[in-house]
Each structure stands twice: as C-alpha cells, then as structure tokens.
Image (cartoon, rainbow, N blue to C red; front, top):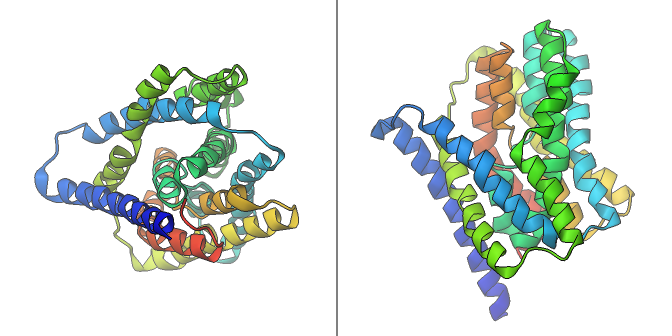
Length: 314
C-alpha cells in the first residue's frame, strides 16, 4: 500500500511539473518579453542534445521483444488512417486541398516527443519511456520525414524529393543515437559513469520541451475552422487510439507495450507537423488552432485513456 501511494504521489508530481512548465511558457510568452530566438534555441537543445542523450541512455537498457512492432505500427496506422479519412472526407465537405493536407499532417502525426515523453514518464516511469522512444524514433519521426513530407508536397502542389527525405532521417541526431544505442545494448550497455552523464542531460528534455510548447501556444479559432478542427481532433484524440488498441488487442499485444503504444497514438498533434504545414502553406491558421486545442485536451484525454487501459502509474 505504501509503495502504491508513493507511486501515485510521484506520478502526480510529474504531471504537475508538466502543467507548471507549460503554463510558465504561456505566461512568459505573453508577459515577460522573452528574447528573440529563444524558441529555436530551446528546440535545438531539446532535439539535438537532450533527446539524443535520453535515447542513448534508455535504448541500451531496453529488452527488445516481439511485441515492440506494435508502438511503431500504431504511428503508421494513425497517419495512414488520417490520410484515408481526410482524403475521402475533404472533397465531400468542400475543403480545399490545403485544408485537407493540413489535417492529414497535424492529426496524423502525434506529439510523441515533446508531450509524449513527459506524459508517458509521468504515468509509467522509465520503463514506459523506453517504449515511448521506440514509438517516436522508429514510428513517428520516420513517418514525418518520409510520407509526412510527401503529403505536404502533394497537397501543396510540389514534387516530393526522396533524397531529401532520406537525408532528413539519417542526419537527425536522435535517430543516429537510436542506432548507436541498439549497438551499445548488444554489447552490454554503457558503464555507470556514462549513464551518470547521459541521465541528467536527458532529464532537461521534459521541462524545456513543455516550456517551449507553452511559448509557442496559440489558440485563435475562427468559425470556419471549428468543423474541420473537430473532425481532426476527433480522429487524433479518440478514433486513432481506439483503432490502435483494437489492432494491438487483436494481435495479442499486452501490458506496457500495448498501453504505451495506444497512449502515443493518443497524443496531441505534433508541433513539427504544424510547422511543416506552415512551411508548405497548408492552412496554417487551422493547423495552429488544432495544435493548440489538441495540447490542452490531451492533458486530460491521455491520463483518462491511461485509466481506461488499466495502466496504473509505474
């Protein structure tokens, strides 16, 4: 009973940290006049240093088993389902190609790193976080860098360039860290002193990532956006994780791998997907509305989904 109480207390503290960092970012953006370039600077550290260190720390400790296909497949199913759904729905509802492409991107790709890592760690500790890394680095990131860019190109009228997709994947530090971590794990893992270096660097990811999300938070819904945003968030926060759960349960996936895979599918829309939509001029206003609303709603729907899955905090 004492251990369970301590676990619940630790989980509540971790979730509180997420809320505090997110709200702090919002407050700083609106009232503190942060220096120009702060968001790109924080994001650079989070993606290239903190995330890479976290991957290097966790992956050598991960015991690979046959069920780990599921969190990866869940990311591809979420994106593929969004492409199919909105590709069919868009013309029937009179959406422009830009609006359709924006919804495929932001509601097909989840915030599996900035939001996913902190939430999964809060709910399931380091064991759950290691599975979340697999979903993100072998699932969500390759989807973004390959078919995500392909969708952005198609719906903006540009020609996809495969060599740029491959270069983006194999020049991304956390993905290279994943490959190195797998090799190190095969040889017994890092020495203790190396883990002692990687762990505190990786620990900076959670507060900085959520602070960065808060700094970038925007939510200005217009009347013409509400219908499309509702369809998008209905898929991303409800239908996609339900479909992934059905796939995993039917395939016999159980335990932490099933829970984390479904929760990663249920994460808010990906910040990088909204940036990509803006870069390709795919209805940026809608993309940012869906992103902002999704972040707020997912702070409620993900913990609730965890309870429904029977996932007691680790």
